[in-house]
Image (cartoon, rainbow, N blue to C red; front, side):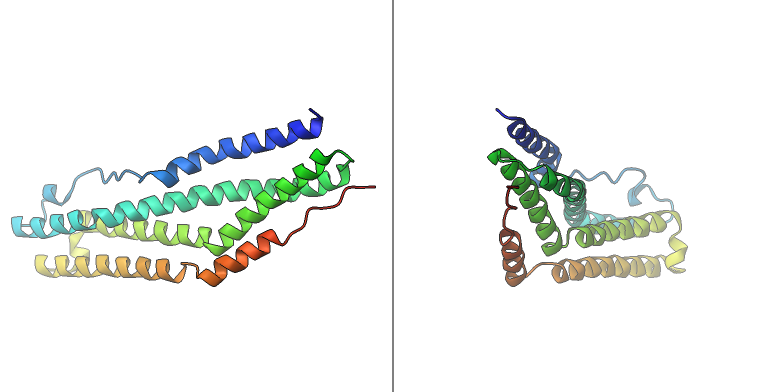
Length: 209
């Protein structure tokens, strides 16, 4: 095998190996760790108030797992894309100058270009970075409310009933904001098709004569 063939195998191996952590996140949900004291341990609320707050936490746990899983998936995809798109941006011009009559050299530069082009198209179409921020911000906003309610319930009002009602309203507002961001950032069929055409329309560079 020529040096170009070995270089192609090394590139494929590194791309697959670095995708392994991404694949693990894509195929399983992330575990939720609330940790620390909960509303049941709070000295600020009555038994009835603790029951209302605890039930709300139980109902939103599925949403929190969904947000955390999506945020981690988009984060890993963003990091993977960033590394390999940057690598291709540096490598492709150098490889283009080093092309020989060896067909493996053309295959290598074609693969690197196609790989980075596909990642760029997917990142733009599925708005990876924007979606990561949306889900991560929603998760962070909820936990900020949760901790504030545990530590400083008077920030939500004077009476217990007012505190709990205002807290639940703000939790629902966070859920609506994240839901709105998710639907707005979901790509249409036309956007996916356009990105696919943009990826496949690039032709491999010709070899130096």
